Length: 328
Image 1: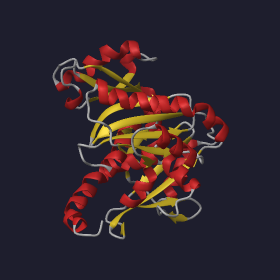
Image 2: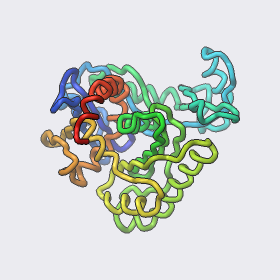
Image 3: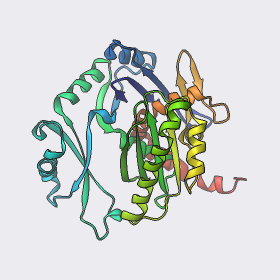
Image 4: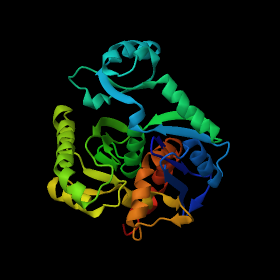
């Protein structure tokens, strides 16, 4: 996962398991002013012994535009060219220079409405710079992903049922993302504005009501405009050290359950955070610094799930009868 101010890497060695669950190692790094990202990423790849490994690159939202446009209704082979013409007035760079990907809004959200598609676009030169960065660090680029779909994967891991609408709020430095998904289907993606670069008690007091309003309006849009069943809950992934006040405020003001994403991830996966040493993460001992680090690295973990999620869900299905017979 690459941003202009940092990076994160997540890996799951084939067959590696702790206590029966897949072993996943995560490392994240904020770049100091003037620090070379190529050197930093190469050091992370070396520390995790990933030279030559296939990589799914997850882009931070600052690198691309994500738009909803009317489905042009053309053959799949012609879709990218057709939407390129439709989004040219929505971009701050020439559409002919854009690398595009297109994915559909779920059919359940389009009943009685004009069909629309999500379009992710970024300048080709910007993408090539990031590709060179990844490959120069010793990784083999396999796929390129966006943060919204990586967050969808995290929600899907925790709540795989297609009848559970889950909002996932990710709070980063200077901005955030809110997704609402059901199962593996992404219904809504919204960028959260006006978050401070450093979230402390003072800055949280200034932005808490604005953030709450953006979350409320997004959930209302999902339920009313998209005509969907009520959302089941909100997951929060907060890359700052200020954890408890955020959860408490949203829990008090929203009419649905709110909990931290990481409290679920550490039960679904055997997670370890590589810092100066390897820290195995547990829900009952997760401290604020570990929570913030794991939240920053969340999109990298979501990108990794593109590869391992089908296996995880198959394992969960196979284990379901045994779980149902247990005390839980």
